[in-house]
Image 1 (cartoon, rainbow, N blue to C red):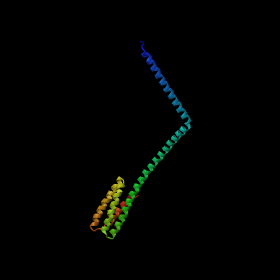
Image 2: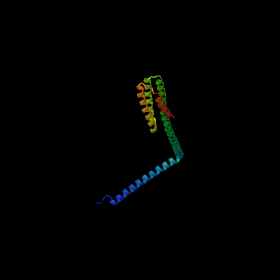
Image 3: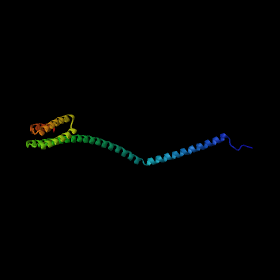
Image 4: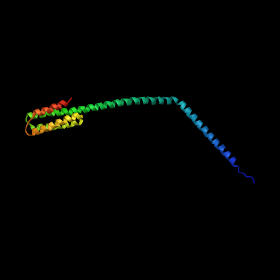
Length: 176
């Protein structure tokens, strides 16, 4: 009986031809897809160029906006510092007004009212100290020491208007 099966070499040759044919078909399909994509891109090149131009313009606008934002942040920081200075001065002005009121109460020999005004001076100075520089905080600490001594003197029934004027002058000297 004759062997009906083809030889191994024949079978391998057939498989190689089938694989080669499949690869060729895949290559042709890839070529057709690339050609279609190329035609599609060629037709849409004005649109693509417009999109690229718009992206470049957007990048330039973003750069300008970043520069402006940076400038505004610096301005905001400067304004914040100015606001702190104004708040500091406002607290000192409040303290100065309260010193004037305390002076009037001392002239009227109203020690209790003067002490109450001096407590408000103390609060205003404490708020100013939180905003002030180290040197300003040191000056405020000295004034507060004078205030504490002044309160003790007033509680004894003495009315030291001159000492209060020294405190007022020091506070006024810190106001710019």
